[in-house]
Image (tube, rainbow, N blue to C red; front, top):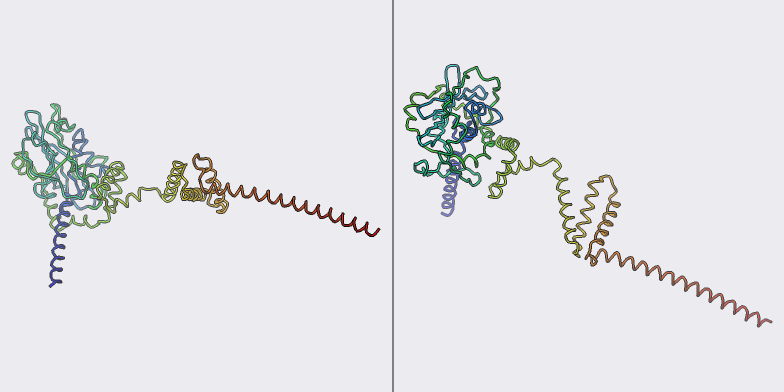
Length: 440
C-alpha cells in the first residue's frame, strides 16, 4: 500500500514537472518560422531608426543579428523588404519576403495610427502563418492615457531577471524619430524597390543560425524587451481585418506546405548552440552582458552557461593573475597591521614573498630564495613601528645577544687559561730555584 502511495505521488510530481516544462517551452518558442525573427527586437529597432530606408537596411544587416529567416528553404537568410500602405491616418508598414519569383510572404505588419490630438499608438503583428493567431507586440502604454483597459498581461514566464517595466504614452511614441518622419507633410510613401533575385549591392546572404544560437544571443536582451514592450491579443486598429488582412495580406502556399511537413523543425535540433549565441552577445555587447550577468547572480538565477562564459572571458593566464592577487592582498594586510604580533601573519608574508620570488625567477635556487625572502620579511617587520613584540624579531635579537655573551665568555676563559699557565710557570720556576738551593 505504501509503495502504491509513493508511486502515485511520484507520478503526480512528474506530471506537474512536465506541465511546467511544457509551459516554459511554449513561452520560449512557438515552433513556427517566426521564432527566427524576434518581433521585440524588430520593435526596438523601429523605435531607434530615423527613416524606413534605414530601418530596412538595419533589419537586413547581419551585424544586427535580428533577421534569421529562411522561408524558402535554400539554407540562406531571406531579404526582408519594407513598404508602407497608408489608410488615412494609419500607416500599415509591411515586412515581406519574396520566397520565389511568383510568391511573397508577409512576415509582420506595423500599424501606426495618429489621432486628432497628436497622440500615436503603434502595434506590431506577426503574420499568423509564421507566429500563430494574434501575436501582437506593443509598447507598455500608460493605460489612462490610451483610454483602454489593462489586458492583465504580467510578462512572460522566462527565467530572466526581475523585469522593470517602463511605461510610455502616445505623446512619447509620437516623438519617435521614425514616427515623426512618416507623418511629415513632405513624406513620400516608402516602397522597397527590391524583389526576387534583385537586391541591394550591400546585401550578402548568410547561412541561418540554429534557433538555439539565435535564442542564446537574444536571451540577454529579454529584460530590455519585456521592460518596454508587451504581448496583446487584440488589434487597436479597427480596420485591421477589412483593410489589411482581407485586402492587402500576401500569403505563400509554399511556406504553408513546408510548415505542414516540418521543414523548419530542423532549426531546433542544436541545443548546444545556445552557449555560442550567448558568447556572441557577450562579444558584441560586453557592457550589457556584464550588467545582466551581475543581476542574474544577485538574484541567484545564474546558469552554467553564464559560468562558462565568465571562464571564457578571463585571460589564459588566470592562474598567474590569481597568484598576483593573493600576493597583493597579503602584503596589504601586513602593512595595515604593523602593530600585530601574530606569528601567522609573518609566516603568510614569508610564504607570499617566497612565491613571488619563485614566479619572477623560475630558474633560481629555492634555498637562496627562501633565505632572501625571510631576511626581507624580518627587516620589514623591524622597520614597522609598534612591532617590537614580534616573536621572530625578538628571537633574532636574543640570538644576537646570546652570541655576544658566548664570545665574551670565550675571551674571559682564554684569559684565565693564560693567567693559570703563567702562574704555573712562575711556580715551576720557584720550585726549580728551591731545588737548586737545596743541592748547594
